[in-house]
Image (cartoon, rainbow, N blue to C red; front, side, top):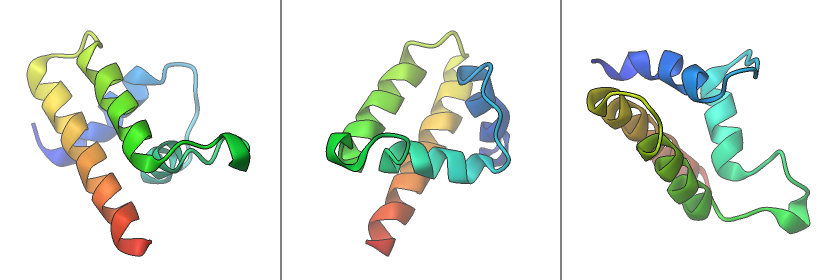
Length: 82
């Protein structure tokens, strides 16, 4: 499985949600942009929660690793910009 395949896996975890840009959706999730600023959690906390959700999902182990790799890359990108 290639890292490019993580987009379908991300959509599988978020059934019922629509995304125009999946990379942006993942970044918004880790930056907790959907919550009020006073309620936002740190990106590391959101990353931990996301990894836990992936771990507990019904995805295959290889798929889980691909999606977790995408989360790692997204968190690293967020950290570089801040």
